[in-house]
Image 1 (cartoon, rainbow, N blue to C red):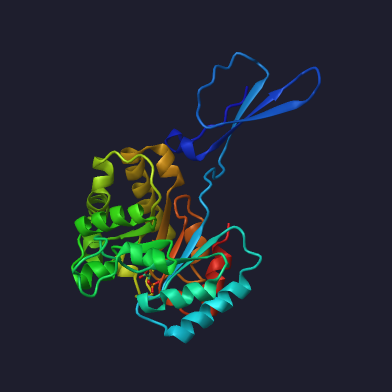
Image 2 (cartoon, helix red, strand yellow):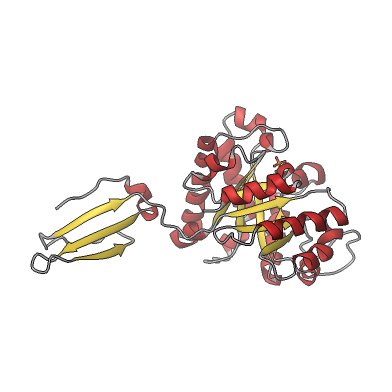
Length: 309
Ligand code: PGA
């Protein structure tokens, strides 16, 4: 009997392959198990633990265009993306233009496999909220996703975790997938408060999901260290992985292993063609939320190709 040794903390991310050799026929049967629950009574059973990524999480490359690109530029970019993506199956692509471009960009996307997101929404479905946009309005323009709690919203517009929690709940109610952003400032990292901040943001922005005992939901999380956004300074793959792992463990602790294994956690903050491969080679990094490098067709297309699994 041969038993491979592995770190049992990460056993749910491993594929356990059992070869049962039949001594008479010489044939081997192959089984897959997700858990180590075996009674090894058969001396012919060999057990191997193969360190292979088991999750079905499809990489997602999301372009957050912020307050950039006019209508014509947005349409040109989307059309170029569509033209270059025909052979790409192993990656999902999402674009988040400004509100005023959503309908036009949706029209340009047509039936192509590009997802559309808004960069924000209000938590109420309608009412006297001058200047605001509801989730239902976003659905009508063809959005499938909405970015919530981006650090620029938190910093410049006073958004709190509680507001993000309300928005995320409404988004799911109207059929939008929220892409919820969290991340620490440089000062918080230097004071070694990163995990505390991430936990506080998760507790706050997903608090009511947990309190309502929601067991399965469709959301995307994006870890974006504030010090890496638009600065050209990226977290190292190791720094990012450490936080992504923490986030997945938090999800596991609050919503169970199945949700934790299926939920995508993107990295954001100065992602470019030169660093995406190393970032995405990490176990818990499932894609990227990209600002600057998503505004130009050549860099966005490179990111999509490099991000494909
Ligand atoms: P950046 O922006 O890629 O320009 O750093 C990322 C973001 O703000 O989502």
